[in-house]
Length: 66
Image (cartoon, rainbow, N blue to C red; front, top):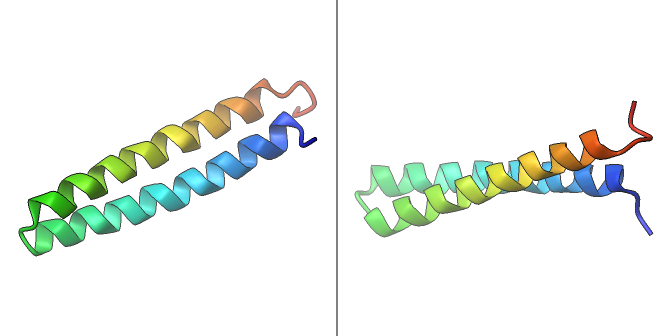
């Protein structure tokens, strides 16, 4: 079983990737005047931020992580 620090790090990395992917998708939607892609991208970006911050919280809550 993985410890909370490892899960936190994994969530941070996955969240950062999702955030970047969403930002690119949203910007592409802006550039092409595609409101649907813009909204989907910004939603994905927000989901990534939440996941990344959740991972940071997990890592901070780990008593072994000093």
